[in-house]
Amino acid sequence: MVAPEVRKVSRETAGRLLVAKVNTEEMPNLGSRFRVTAIPTMILFRNGRQVARQARAMPAPQIRSFIEQAQGK
Image 1 (cartoon, rainbow, N blue to C red):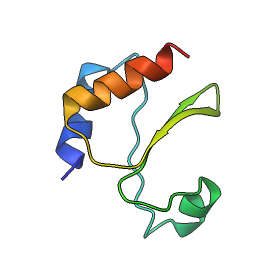
Image 2 (cartoon, rainbow, N blue to C red):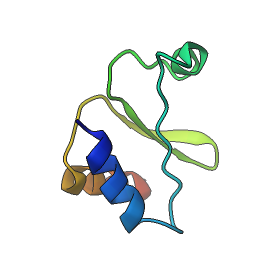
Image 3 (tube, rainbow, N blue to C red):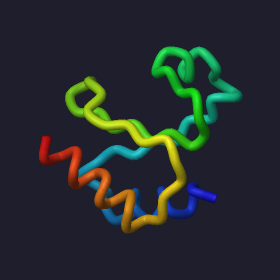
């Protein structure tokens, strides 16, 4: 459900942000490492450090807002 929305944001931010989708059922160690307990969970990183986290599905406009708020931190 959220994948098409993430793709929209990925296309809009190409060249500025790196967007990656991880299937934590296929990569449970990665899910554990980043304490993913809900699907979907969006985690934003800057310079390798987590700067924001959101555990719910959002439409593209809310994802953009989530990113913009985190960039202001």
